[in-house]
Image 1 (tube, rainbow, N blue to C red):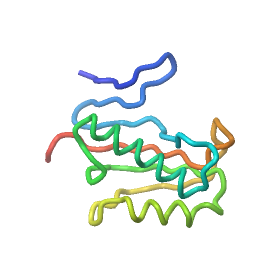
Image 2: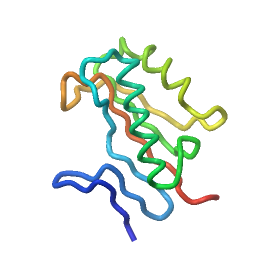
Image 3: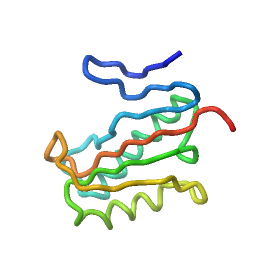
Image 4: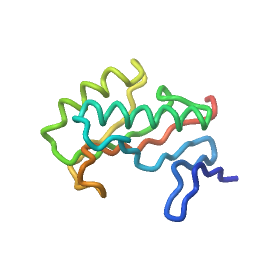
Length: 117
């Protein structure tokens, strides 16, 4: 059975199926923060969703990071590096892309294992 969280007309924030949590792209709450602040807020949203699914960042299977400006790569990485679980760094892709809200600097999509292996 597919379990969906925060279901809206256009998207759900997360779906869990067959032991895997699939998160929608997470963005910051605040538009006026620098890349470090926006990344921290985005990662906090990921932590909260993963907790609701009964998992955490040490179980992330894949991360996709979208930056509006690759000049923010180092600033985002500084926050990411302090957040990610040591010894459990997931495969990751980072690309530059325009985001739906031009004031957002970062959007992150993750999938994570829910059941124990």
